[in-house]
Structure formats: C-alpha cells, structure tokens
Image: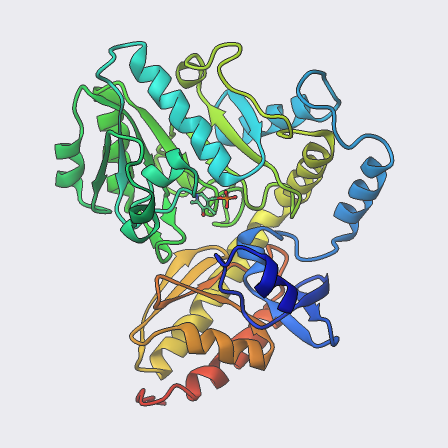
Length: 396
Ligand SMILES: *Cc1c(COP(=O)(O)O)cnc(C)c1O
C-alpha cells in the first residue's frame, strides 16, 4: 500500500483490501480471510476463480505458445470467431484486448462507414449515463460529464440522448448520423435496461438513416443476462450491426472483440485497423474453453439470477431505503435512497465483495456458476449490513 501511494498515479481509490488467491466464488486476502466475490473483478471472472478447466488450458498453452502477433495464423482465432458468429447472428470478428479498445474499433468502423457515403456523415449518437471506456474515442461517446470534462476537446460530432426516450432518439438522427452506440443494459450507469421498444426504434432509425447500430455488450454480454447477448433477450431480437464485448470473454485473460455484419465489416479494409496483442493463442484458447462451458450454464444463470432477484426484492421490502432492484440474469443492481459507499465497506467487513456505481446503486456481478447457497450467504450478509444503515427506517 505504501509503495503504491508513493509510486503509482493516484487515479484509483482502492478499498483497503489486498487479495492473494481465489477458489470458486471466494477470494482470500493476504491474511487468509475469505470473501464471497459478487463483483468478480467487475464482471470478468465469469467462472469464479481457479476453475479447473480454465487453469488447465492456461497451463497447457503457456508451455506451447503464448503470443504470435497478427503476422501469423494460430489454431484458435478462426474457431473462436466462427463460434462467436454463430452465437451472435453476425458475421465477422476483430479481436482486441479490452472493452475500450473494442469500442474504439467499432467507432472507427462507423466513421469509415459514414465517410464512404459523405464526409459530413460522422455523427455518433450515444446515451446519457452510458459508459464506453477511457480512450479519446470511447470517452467521447461516454455520456457522463465527470469522465469527459478534464479532457476536452474530445472527438467531435457526438450527440447524447436520454435513455428510453423515443422522441429524443428520433430527433437526434439525421443524414449525418454514422452510428449509434448503446448498452442494452447500462452497467456503470447503474444497471439500467433499455426498453425493448426503444432498442427496436434505434434499429429502425439506424436502418432509415443508414447508420450502424453498435451494441456495447462489454458488461452485459457473453452470458451474464442469461442469454449469450443482452440484445437476444427481447423477441423479436433487435440485431445490431456491430457488437462489442470483453469483460468475461476469457475469464481474466484480457480479450475483447468486435462482431460485425457484412455491411459494417466492409467499412474496414486491409491495413485500416490492427492490434499487436489482440486475439493471441492463450486468450483465444481460453475463450473457446469458456464458451464450451457457458453453453451448458445459460439455464443456470437464468435460474439462480431469478432466485437472487427475488431475494433482493425481499430485502428491498424490509428496508425502506431500498428504492428498486433492476437487471437480468446475474447482472443485478439495487438502487438505494442513501449513498452506497459505507454499505460496500461494511459488506467487505462482513466478508462480501460488491461494488457501488453511480453513488447509490449497489452492483452485483457474481460468477456464472454461483450456487443458490452462495446467494443465500450473500443475502444474509447484505441483510446484516442493511440493518446497520443509520437513520434509515426498516420495516419487517
Ligand atoms: C467496462 C466497460 C468498458 C471498458 O472496458 P475496459 O475493458 O475497461 O476497457 C466499455 N463499455 C462498457 C459497457 C463497460 O462496462
């Protein structure tokens, strides 16, 4: 802690907790104290910690080939791309390492798509409260001024509209619109789902104005909502032109991707985009192993996610300061009428890792293979913590 205080950029506000190892849904600190991990490194450790099949492929691949760059082929990028295309209903894949980087590539795709039609067609529509990452492009479409203000001027031509406001959306589109980027369930913004009607309207308007519909599924995608992608929850499915994902894709090894339909993919020609690390053999092999396991886990995610949602609703009824429980599958949020920071600290003291986003929304991103018993444990700890909230009337 002292070394970090003296030598790191002071951009993070860490909790006073140093982790040493993990197993399943639990992590252990340096003193060996156990914590139930319901935030999983912000939705990354999708199969919990030290999953035997993931450990095995990492060990094996580390002894064979870690990195090739994209100068050469290896055995895992092609099969993973084929699999992602089949899961998504889209056609072509670009591999990156992080969510931000994948968003960045998708924005370049939209700009290139627009530019091929007219030099004036470069506007991107994005939603208020959204989060898309920290690089200049991704930051420019992030709908929260607190992240943007110190870095302006940013990429021009971005219009922000209120979430689930169909009239505002309609008003923002024009012939200058190259793309619209949205999270089907806003994560960092406080676990806020788009209404099916809103997503359908975005699809209709993107078609009318020949703009690319980009779904940023970095947090809400690849199994977490109980479907492969969050846009697959509604019927009829609102199929985006471009899908971006990252967090859980290789269970802790950095791997992100852009999925594109033929129209969007045509905007990127040889030499227009690339990555040194993206889509390496280790990450892609782990990604394939993860998707193999995920296939059988979707019903479990729906089942335990539904169970957790019910239990959180029970808690909400007992504690007057809880305003709302939101989300799908294992992406759940509890909106409070009080600040969440102390609750998160009290939960850590109790042995439960969660996080608070947007000051007042507790965020739960447990591992996909979490058990009902572990959910019961978490709810019990949370109940104890809620009982201690000062000045908040509770009713039984
Ligand atoms: C986390 C997140 C990102 C940024 O991903 P990084 O891997 O941190 O670069 C982008 N979009 C959404 C929706 C996210 O949740």
